[in-house]
Amino acid sequence: MEKSLFKPFLSIIILMSLSIVALAFTVGVSLDPKPGVVMSLPKEVGKWGGDEIRSCHNPEMCAKEYRDANFYVSELEIPDICPNCGSKLFNCSRAEKEQLPEDTEFVRAAYTNDAGDRLYTSIVLSGTARDSIHRPQRCLKGQGNTLDDEYTLEVPLEGRDPLGVRIIKTSRTFHTPTGPKPYYGYYAYWFVGQERETPYHIGRMFWLAWDRVVRSTANRWAYIAVSGERKADSDDYEETVIDFVQHVYPFILTETMKQKVYGQ
Ligand SMILES: [Zn+2]
Image (cartoon, rainbow, N blue to C red; front, side, top):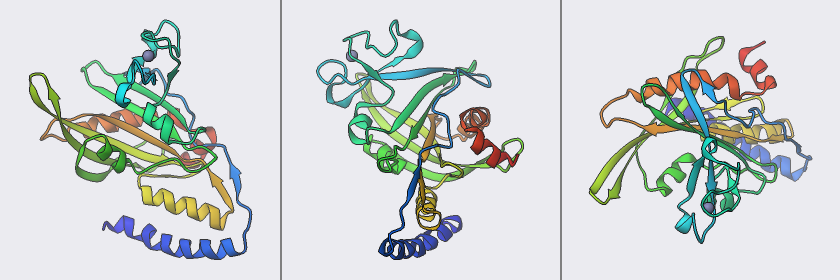
């Protein structure tokens, strides 16, 4: 186990014990619904141009067997209406819509640059009803990916400490009419609470418990992901992640969170 993970792990056991004590003397936990991120993605991020994505969930026509039909918002004549079947479009997949609580919020976009690189970014904001953020590893495996490696990448940011972003290297094989085709991907993510951020799922669980027990508050956590294709034997994707995160980061934080992280 990594050293940086060990401390929250130990602390979480202590906190769980504390929670049991706290529950015995039930103190009301007040929910603060104000998130640390804004739920929108900019059209321009540095040299990247973005286009939001919408999905049709119509199970009889466009989304048979949970294969979503995705559309770029710029290409839609009527926003939020499927051009193929006329159903309402959503900013999440059909599986997410069915599995996550009703008040979970989503925003997704694809970005391209002049070099022809493409990446996908999404923000999932947990609702107020119950925590709806799952371990990304589970979802990636569920989608048929093999997880090849996992580590934390430090993204240098102007005016503050580097942001820790968790990276998962994935691989899978697509079966195409011309035969099997290998695909190598990267998946970068981090979590943002009302006043906190962490690249670790266990770190997020720790702060959830800490805030409930010590501060008697609960807030909504956001899960930010950036993903794309990588070459099998190259770390070039790290430059892509760093460049994109450096540019998108200031756009997606609320003023309160900005003041906190930039220490203004
Ligand atoms: Zn449709």
